[in-house]
Image 1: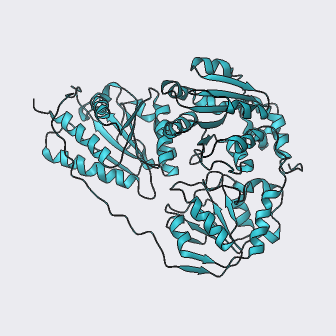
Image 2: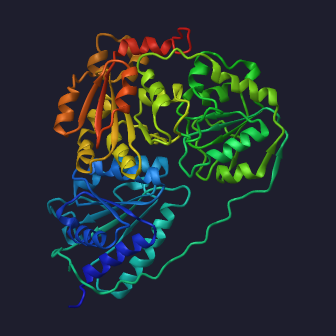
Image 3: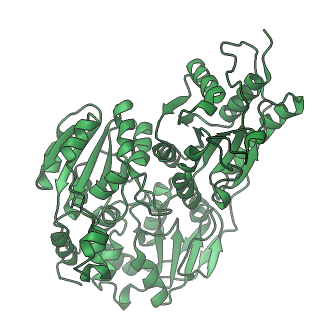
Length: 541
């Protein structure tokens, strides 16, 4: 039997993706995906290195793939069918764009003759994500021209490479397909894709001796490879204080934590002011720290492989290279007393109560190197304020677009890559936004504890000026949903535990369980505001 064109070119596409380092595929099934999905399933059965996940909810699928790519820093393929299904990937693509994550969307499409002619399940998919993708290309898998096959081989490898180059980002491969869509299964013709190799660009600079003696490093959210040990060695050798964002994956006992709370409590007097701040990573969780740099007119250098990220526009020098390369080429004669002054900030007493106590318990009891995903709004702020990194630095969040949609699915994508039991810390409103994602926890029996702080609505708004509009606040911003968490757990067949105090969380986490578990902690939004105002021991409005 001669291999047909659709089967041959689809196999070349899949083999080129694998040859380029793609090992994870997430599929949202649909009729138009038929040839790619079937041949991918067959390829997966033949190749044990490939992980294939099926997620019938496209929005959930997009974020599940995002979670895998974010955690592994590897390209992940997302396959979907034509029509509005593809639009459901947009939120995940937006997050991948801003957070520099190599997400690859294979969007199967109707052929050209069905476009703009009233054909069902047909929308303009050509560059549907617009500026959110780094690259866009169309492959005509049913074109018999031999040059098309070599184009697929070459361009696929080129695109995957570009998706992983700084600044990393998502891309779209659109696949218009005509019926018949059924490929040839069990076809044994050997597929060979000529490898396309890319030599790494040297990432270094001339050695530099800094003249400043009061230098501070701010390690922001890390979008690249870990550099924790290099940063710690540098900090100790040159007595350089490190303010470590909770998402930097560098936070530990030697780094400064909770900078937002310290600034809010007016702890950073003039004696702490540095001559220079060196910033790594993306925008910090703390908005106050960037405002502090600008208000005090402290010189700032930005170091990173991605383009400078500073909405405050207070960066005077940009060095486009990795933190590891930078640290290996810099030396500083920093003031040892200045270093110790900053270290002492970690000894300031925190009065941790209410919702923040959940993050504090996690800091104390999580097993070493546990992967933790944190929802936006209150959860990530609590973690940044009180989580010291005693046991784990593997903290993740979607801090690109800062949305609350897709958080559950992203966390489950993270969990699918972890050899250990992982954790999601979220609120009830965020859980509601992505309840469909819980199906992936059930379907793949993922080992994750989903800790839901249930304050019956959007707690973050209670800290904002609109909270004073009491006649309209709950209707427009508090938005209580009165969710019954036990029934949600029953629906998705999750183990369920309700705790009344943060201390009960420790015992719950020590209780063995197989598969996913939902842990509910009930809170009160008004009491939560009061608890946060007194975090540093004194009430601050």
